Length: 108
Image (cartoon, rainbow, N blue to C red; front, side, top):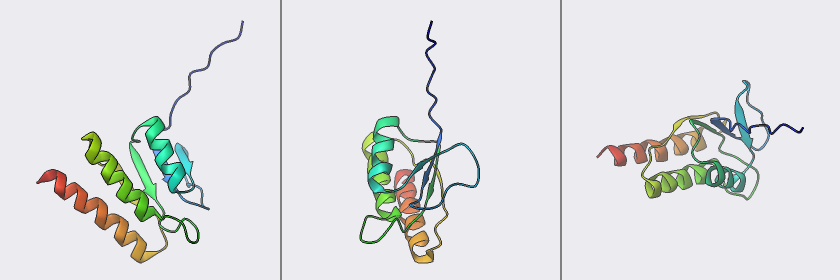
């Protein structure tokens, strides 16, 4: 008799076009489209780690952060725990800025 295996979704999402997380327990998405699709299909993870630069001439981690804010606003849920591992300091600051601004808006 074939046994059904339960699929367990990992509670952490790692956005990066090239790198892999240094620890286990992350679901990896490589671009904006995969980021959006994963959240729409699986719901909001407990934690998200953002990269900014996801390739040339495509949407960035900043675009993902803006989409996440809209998703959370529409669904009435808070932003999950996040960090930004991007080597791009301006991009990192932009992602942090949009997420912090959204958190402040929710707390007002």
